[in-house]
Length: 229
Image (cartoon, rainbow, N blue to C red; front, side, top):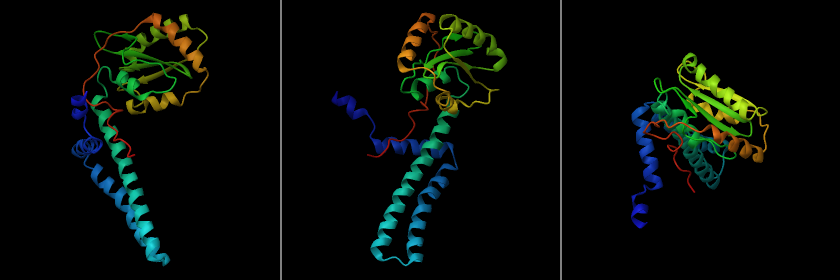
């Protein structure tokens, strides 16, 4: 157990690795982080002087500006790193499953494995059950995956006919970006209780799942730097 703990990278080391990865793949990341860091600091110095504040008040302003700048810089790093991570897996088989597995919490029930797949094209359908009802997510070109999606809709409605079914499409010709998938799912209107979510999920387990390799690489939900305690 001690050896496993020693192998785990520390918080600062993880953040530094994320920063290096982001800087290499996004030339605008470093200037934006510096702007986010220095902007509040400069403002916290200039504003108290203009207002004619005393030394103690100026020091407090500078400290506050530094903290705000660090927070904004971390937010910029998180957003830019997340965008890069999603770009690395977008369009690859299993990308939707990786996002669903790591991006949904609370009452959602889902899996990184698809419920239907075309073995030739590797187009896939994923299913999630939550307070809004059942959400089917297609992965692949719209026209090519339409038949697979329609078959899955019919199966679901046959087993749980009174539960709302939502359809989201993720693919090269879709308006929904992979990085906005879970956000779109959370915006759906809630109609089920937590108990009903579990009941529906249990009913749907009879449909089974399909094994589809998940792309290796960066997990889009684990690239975020840890929050300082």
